[in-house]
Image (cartoon, rainbow, N blue to C red; front, top):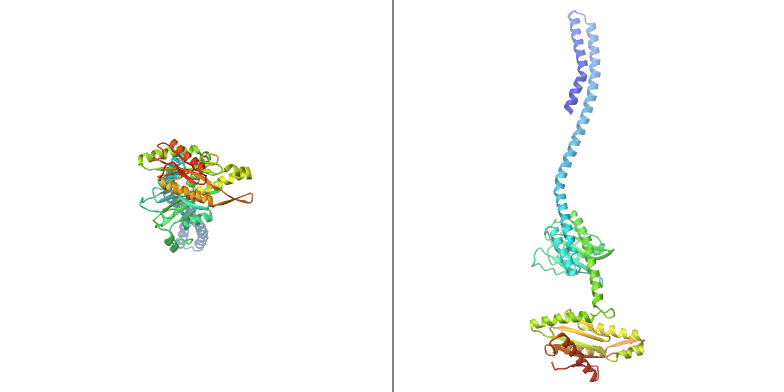
Amino acid sequence: MIQKQKRQLFRLNLPLISFLIVLHIISLFYIFKKSFIFPVAIYVLALILFFFAYQKNKRERNLLEIKKQDLREKINLLQESIRKEKVLTPSLDKRNYRYTLLKQALDRFNQSLVLSDVGAAIAEETFILFGGSGNVLIYLINHENNNPEILFTKKLNLELIIKEKYGDLFNEWVIKHNQPLLIEDTSKDFRFDFQRIKEEVSRPIGSLIITPIITSDRFIGILRIESEEMNKFSSDDLRFLSTISNLAGIAIENSLLYGDAEELAIKDGLTGLYLRRFLDERGKEELQYAFKQNSEISVLMIDIDHFKKYNDNFGHRAGDIVLMHIADLLKGIFHDPVYTLSRFGGEEFLVLLPNTKKSKALKLAENLRKGIEEGVIILRRSPVKITVSIGVAAYPSDADSWVDLIKQSDTAMYKAKQEGRNRVCSLRSA
């Protein structure tokens, strides 16, 4: 285009050039005739015309140079745009691929309402979505103490042991600031002391990204990916992890609500202990397992002595206080998660002790009886002592079925009542 404009400029000046040539020829003619006045006048006129032509051409050349620079600038911008497109195209392809996989991951998030299954799905799908680029950790907030507790992990190295079950300084930062965290190089990040990282974190971490899991304006957990390599994650990765966190949060919240509803269906609202129908299911399962493993099962049937008098003397609310007091003592003594605690009837409780010999069950029952006897509760500003009668039975020494095991423990408990209450009894010696 510049060359075209130069040719156009030449054509515009062609008449002037032709006129100057004619004047030059005429001047030569007069010089040949030895007449110099007219040629001088002609040359002066030619110089004047040449000067104006030169100025005009100069302006035209300047305009052409400006246009040339503008075109060069446009060419540079186009080249830069092409370069960025080349860089962005793979990134966009990667992003589109990720979001395609994300839809599949979301379907898996919602396949189950069991929290452990949901946690496993989130960890495994996140690991896949990031191409196995680092360890994935999911923490849930325990709202009793507001501390994060690890729910599930997906590790690059299966032999890696994560000792920080309740999180570390990185999780603390996310919880405190309630915002995502990207660290490209843990040794250089100004927000964290690298020496403290080495002291408090048991595994090597070069880079990481963490996003909070928030649902209904409630901070419920943390989703985290970490790598031993530095500069493994980008801000685009952090944005993508935030998207996963939002979707995972919905799945986790649904599973928590389902768990709460399920607990309400199988637990007593007053004491928080399991109801009898759940105990019966669990007892039958444990009995089948004990039969296959050739192990023992013991049960304790516990009845509060003279329970009616608490209601008669202090009102029905007093009876509820007594029941909650006994339930709390049971939870304190039988805290092992393998034990099952149940409110069996009105004032009766049953404790299922898998893989427990009868001799040990008798000792545990006696510890419980003493703990209840030695304790004091306040009913209407009056100190009151409580006692219980406990019957102990075991499989296979006392019974060979769940129904018979319950009957034997109940019979042993009535034996304790008949012998004066506030005691532990068994139909057969251990």
